[in-house]
Image 1 (tube, rainbow, N blue to C red):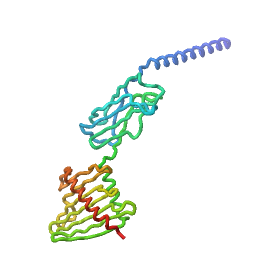
Image 2: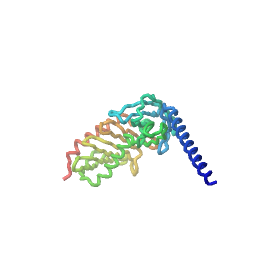
Image 3: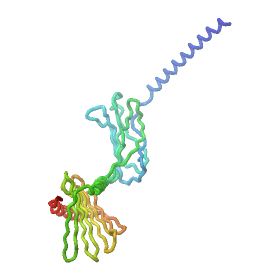
Image 4: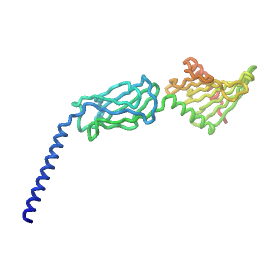
Length: 280
């Protein structure tokens, strides 16, 4: 009986090994027969959900980043509608080098707002799939960047040297403060003109490298503490007008370019005078 068991065991092991070999061969054959992808697909979503305008544009590009310079294999620009949304970026399989590294670049432009993916998404080769779920985050707009710069400057004036002055005429009294830092000279001017029973006007001028960065104008009724009208204009480092708003009561409108230019010219004139009043 023992003599019979051993041959049977050997035969069973041989059959099992044969089966495993056949399964491996079948898997290899299946993988070889799997069709090569012809598109990159997936979904686009925002990390913080937000509505997207009807004119928003979704830009996709498939790029070979192993080459210098990098080469774009396929690209498209579409209207995504509301997010999350699905996408499909076709490409020519014959242009794919299996030894190269490919990434999907995604950009969403919605008016002034730009959304980007905070990381790259490898696809297709080197173990990466042709389907990805892309999560995007917003970049600060030009106006948001300027607002942050202006707020930072306002916080910093407490540590700057100050120059002061005043003047008056038959209808008003004006007082001003100029704030200087040791490296960049005059950075900020605060000017208040009091018209008595007609209220007062406050101007705040901010400067970058000796040029107007922002102007805020407030109109305050007599005996009131808060402004009932605020006009704001701001310029980026290239001198482009990026902040232009008027608020009167509960209404907000776009500041006309001519009005913004008037504020800009006023800021230049104030700088020419007060920058010479360096504090001792």
